Length: 113
Length: 115
Image 1 (tube, rainbow over the protein chains, first blue to last red):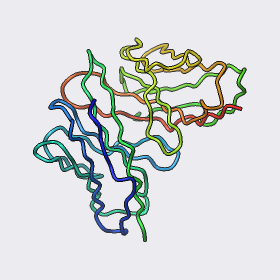
Image 2 (image 1 turned 120 degrees about the vertical axis):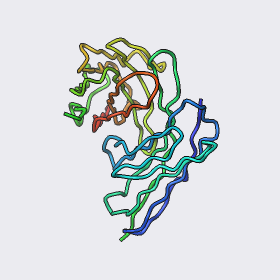
Image 3 (image 1 turned 120 degrees about the horizontal axis):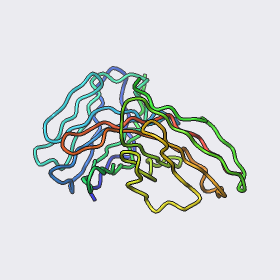
Image 4 (image 1 turned 90 degrees about the vertical axis):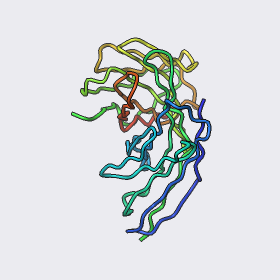
């Protein structure tokens, strides 16, 4: 199964961009990269996902390298409410309609005033 | 409605008790999931239901018994749990299928304490 590696913690100043890296060097060609975040003791919240191309939505941007071995989640203007654990996840292919999420250990992002 | 609702939010149970966790979604998703999350760890998959049929059981002990009565509801029946089963139990749903990626919507979880 694909595996993801993330730094355990990062700091970011409020108002600045937060760039969260993820390594997924064993990813297969049809496996998606997902990012979720989890604010203390709440359920994980979907942020963004992608396959090959860079993606952007109202929350963040996802930059995937051409070889797909790594990606970066960018929060363009971090706020205190973005303080959370950010999970880089690979959705692996499975039999039939089954798709499993392989979770990284997460990066604890602290946004400081 | 774009939510997954889990009840109860908190549950304390003894090792001889029988209790159930409930999960409900009205997004028309046909895949539903149970996850277990220990402190400072990522969620661990327990069960997957696809079109109301159990499709994945991640070797979960039989003291956890899932049930999917219909496409909107998912239950997790608990019996004779151990203190180490104390954790945050998360329910999620998604639209199964091949091809393009589908998002997974998570509930807020049930905080379970076994005493």
